[in-house]
Length: 582
Image (tube, rainbow, N blue to C red; front, top):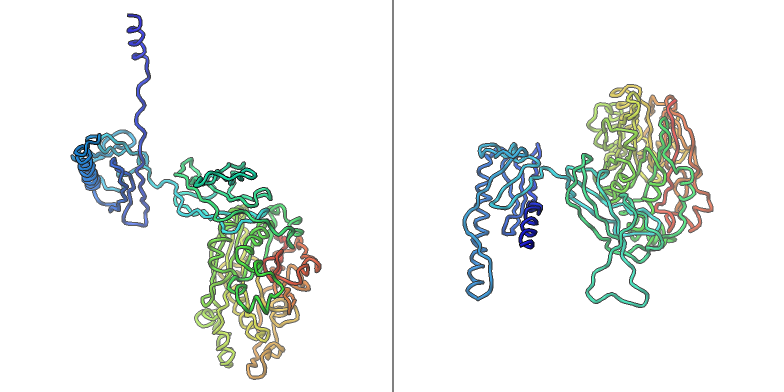
């Protein structure tokens, strides 16, 4: 009797059965699209992806879900019947359409005439017979998660993270390493790798030398900053971590740039990073850079060095030239975004490379972009009509100028701490040919006129920072024109390609520009040439130089004869300086 009583009391005290776990019904509904999408797994296990008009009454969607469920049940009933005929045990399956209803967050039934866009709210519950589905409207979602192909010990691994209804800075990251097989032993045949979680929970992972030979795995959970998280995804590296090259030329410069500079200062970098489309040619390997080990010209290898170099400068502004479009999209933009920099890209229409400007998000916001192609602007923009009319007198030169695909990137930025401070950041890469001085003069005249329009007309009196590879030494007409504000019609650069292409055009511009890093002995060092081609020009009325980060020593640059090399990713050297408002 006591046993019966204890059993009865136990039944009375037993906690109520927990409600069954809810499945997910994921709804994507964005203002700019006429349809919403609904993704769920029906009770029979079949996945459904439905696209429905936002204005359509809810009842039609529920009817479609009921019909699809009935079809699934009918198939299951048929299988069940066959299984019983064969003598196998099988559960009964009903072919009838179940009741399908949607309940709001408050537990009220949503009327069938309510439009889809209003009906499917976050937190609503969908009932399909006995099954329950929690509606997740626009949950944080990963659209792409990718690791670089090449991983080097001591160099940052920056995954590409693309999201919807989320932001990479709000995502959660967990890094894993492959477990090294025991010495002299092999894992069981067919066993997958064993993963060991590391202590790193940041987006960027720097593998140590101890991880050489092991692969990495990343788990990322998308978040939106409002405590909403979507389902995690995992990605494994395609290959193991490899040994790095040891000391790099830029390491000594990082000593000066360990921290982001203060609020009133702007660390600025300009750098021609050597486009892959130029590095990966037979001419480059055999004529331009025969001294460089072939593997050190490979894109993946150079990208590892480049990302470490740029991240280590802790810059506020970075202007890059010769940026392959794929390198910007898949490598540099994700990597530098992880270090707090937002990137902008301007492609040369006839090439697959162009210009990139990055700015530190917590110091600047983007107000506007004013990018141009020189040839197009010269013909179509009234700002350049006077120059265009002058150039028309020299048809051979005009034709050469218009054939060039050179571009100018102009971005107007606003300080996040002091909105009254705005700055015009320009970035360019001028025509390269040694006998093209007259072409470069026309290009720089177009550039300065355009910058004048932006920095004087559209945003009166904002300071200018003008970076780039100008392909012009300090003795050139182009440098003299930028520095002094004028160029005489009889300057020798007007006949840089002989009398046949001679043109005499006096030019002027209103800016007072100064080369912030002076005139280094060289910024480009290859086997057959070295010279200063790159500059950071600043508005000397509004900005001053706080410090110039020293360039590498000549011994460092020539350790492997010339550039690029196993310890430096480009044939140019970055210029870096800290600027401040006067």
